Length: 534
Image (cartoon, one colour):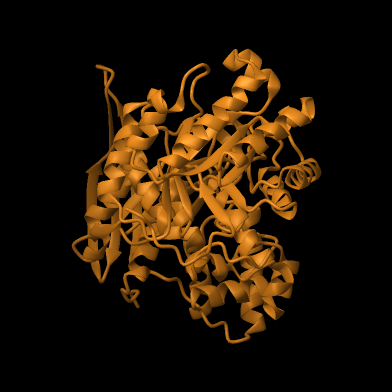
C-alpha cells in the first residue's frame, strides 16, 4: 500500500535494517520479524524501508507478498533491492529484474559496481558493459513506472583507484533516469573529511542527486553520513541501532536526531522524533538483542549523571551538562547514586523518585554518608535503584521500611548418591502479627529461598503473586580470593508492568542473594501501594 508522507521529496531518510541490518552476526529474522520491524520503522516516520531482495530467497519474496496485504504504510514507501542485469543479457529478460517488478514495490534500489577492479574481477566483464548494464536496467525499470535508486557499491575505494570511471557510473545512472545515486563506503574505511571532499567533487562534476551509505568499520559511519550531507547529499541510508555486517552501518537514530536537532531539518513527520527511544528499544526486542545502554540519544545511560559535580550543575540548570532535552527523543534524565554522589545527586534522585527531602541538609548529608559507607563495602546503587529508594525512605521516615520481619532462613543443598541434587529452603518470619514458617524446593538454593519466601507471604500479600525474578547477576569483589571473597548479587524483578533492581552484599552468595530478595519483595509491595507494617 502506498504511503502518504507529510514531507516533501527534498530529503530522504532511507532505512536498510531489513536487508543490511539482517546481515549482522547473531540476527536471524523471520518474515514475522521483518513485518514487525517494518511497522516500527513506518511508525517512526522514515521515508523508505528497504525490505530485502525478492527472488533471491523465499523469505524476502514472502515478505513483500505479505507486506502488501498486511501493512498499511502511513509514512514509508517499501523498497525492493536487487542488482543490475547480467552481463550480455537484456534487462527486460533478466529473471531477477522481473522478480523486482513482481514484488509490487513502487521503489527499487539497484546495486551497481563502481570500482573498476570489482567490475573486471567480480563481474568478469568490461568497464563499458558495466555502464550498459546500469543504463539498460535503470531505463527499463523507469519505463515500467518504478522509481529507481542506484547504490554505487565500493564507490569511495573505486574513486580512489579510478575517479573518472567511478564518476562515469554515477553519470550513467543519473542520465538513465535514476532518482538518486547513492555513494557507498562498502568497506567502511573512509573518514569524514575524505567523504565530504569526494561527495562535493562528484556532485559538482555530475550534477546527479546524491545519497550516502556508510559502514562503520572506522567507527565513523554517523559522522561520515553527516559529512556527506554537509557536502550536498540529500539521501541518507541507515539501519536501526546501527545493525549490519561486521561492525555495522550508520545508526539511523543519531543520524536522524542530528539532522532534526542540530541541522534544523525536518526529516520525520511532526512529533515522531519523541518516539525514537521507544522505537529503538522495540526493534532491539524483535531481533532479540539487549538494547545498548550507552547508545547516543536513546540509550538508558545517554542522559545518566553520576559525578557529584555534574549533579550540582544540573540542579541549577539541566542544560549545563546535557546537549539536548532528553524528552525531545523520548528519553529521560537519570541521576545515578554512587560513592561519587554529593548532596545535589541525592536531592535530584529524591525528586526523580517522588520523595520530597524538604531541603533538609542534615538528612541529605546522612544519606550521602550512608551511600558512601555501603558502597565501600561493595553495594552499588547506580545499578539498583529499588534498593536505594528503600534506603532513602528508611532515612526519611527514621525507621526501616518493613512489610515483614525475618526470624531466620536456611537453604540446604543435598547431593544424592545417584548423582541428583535437591535444594530446599525454610524461612521463618513475622507479618501482620502472624508467625509464618514456609518450606519450598527449587532449582538451586536461591530459587528455593525465593519460593519459600513467596509461599510464606502470598497469603498475606497476594500482590506478590505477580512478581517474577527476571535476571540474576553475581560478582566476586576485589580484595579477597576464592571462596573467602565478598560477593555482590544484583536481582531484577518484574510485576508484569515494570522492572526494578535490588542489591545484596555478603561473604557468601546465598546471604547476598537473600538481602537482594528481601529488597525485591519489599519494593514490590511498595510499588503495589501496600502500606508498610507499623
